[in-house]
Length: 270
Length: 249
Image (cartoon, rainbow over all chains, first blue to last red):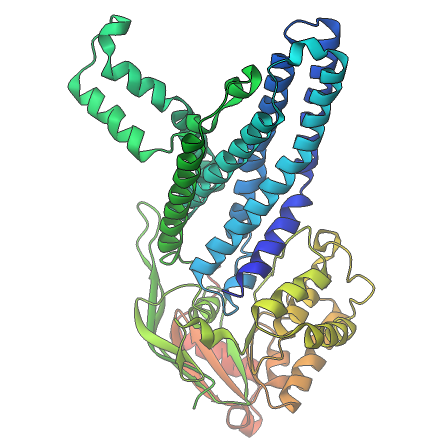
């Protein structure tokens, strides 16, 4: 396992120097600047808007990071055969997958922390300018929401690794990851709808109900990580929710990466 | 104990829809002794790179077994004493030669002090000391090849596998690689390299193997082959013609 750190380190360095990342960061910082401008121009519900904009910016930039930098970090290894320089060493395929994943986790943490500094600064500036709108505001909730966003991005990366181990092209991995993201963010609501169709005045076939229920347990429930509304409205989040969600994150990510590593062991690189 | 050995290795690749399965290797038996320089010859698509990739466990044989110093190639420890330079190597764009060597050295288990000494020595040898901090993406093809060579040798391996090491190099680069192979030979290292350039094979190798259409057609010492004033080129062309192989790629 001593090989994990060098693999993680070069993955992190390769990712942090990727020019696409600079574009994503610049875009995120522009969004934060725009949110400041907007709040100053039309100061209504500034507290809620500031928190929501700051968290949404981190969430969106993080998603772009996973989809356009993260997926490429592994796909480029396979497409351009950089993987030869790793696997021709005393490194197993499983160690390669885990090391690469750790590197991407480091990258996500670094980018989220960097963007969070600016996001929190933008909130602080508005809080100082419009203190009346921040009566229910709590820094702890915002930081917790950012932590959950980071965890969601890491979980999504684990899923992208799983798809990368199954497919041979980065485009298919990208498409499957995006689909998982969309399903993961909506499956809770869809499940609630199909289980109580009468409330919406619609009819759902039993097969559809079973399918949605199966998808609910198969796909990650990413909407659980979204606590932007609670953070924006200053609504407390129960401790057992936090602990259970972290447990869910650790178990699901570990399981998906283990599966990816198992599949990768059978992969050939002609 | 043989440095490298394959026993009855066969490997096929599934073709695309409507294209029949391609048999890349058939019953390949190779034995490479410790300390010898072995040249692996063959036309394009003959199975040279496939054989090398099986030896490095990058692809799996359909049947047969490959070993490095007696260890099955499926064990990752078998690769600890092996240095490998792929054909047309491609490395991480945003890493420098220094970082590449750090990575290769650390995963191969050498300590920091030795790593620094060897990195300095090798970068000097491959003439990359001035470009060592630059990102690989700014390198020319020859510089990438030389960085790959330094990477292959960073952990002072006993066995060096080079797949077309002269590919993309200018005459100066070719001379540098040639000198490096001779240096490795003088140190008693095992060198297994594939090449199209017959003069290089004649210059460096103790023994050669000629593979055509995935089948090993000939394996002998260079001294035996070149007695009676025969040239390697004549022998190579005759073997390829007899086997009915040609330039398929």
